[in-house]
Image (cartoon, rainbow, N blue to C red; front, top):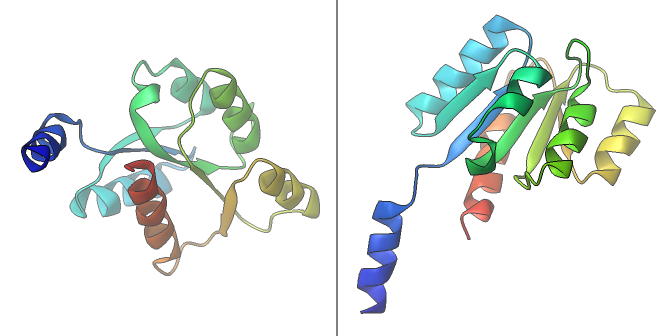
Length: 135
């Protein structure tokens, strides 16, 4: 009986959703394509305001946030999302993070992965965080 309930739960549960927020359309499209071809549903946003306005944000299992967004940094966006009750684990992507950015990310419990995203470090970390969020 327990196995049948677990199987039914898997069927009824919505697919995992990764939220990507990056103002660079090439990065957004590349990440969306890469994760979607590996079976992860992706919602992508060009700026923080679009992400904050998304009605499905409580369904996100993981966030990939660019630190250098227009009008609001990735860490500021994360603070707003946390205040709104979004608890999904997050990854900050940026180029040459300052000591201050590293300290703020560490305090927020967010790992930084530096651009350019040339290897599979981001993909591995997203999978790890999404698998952990499923439990």
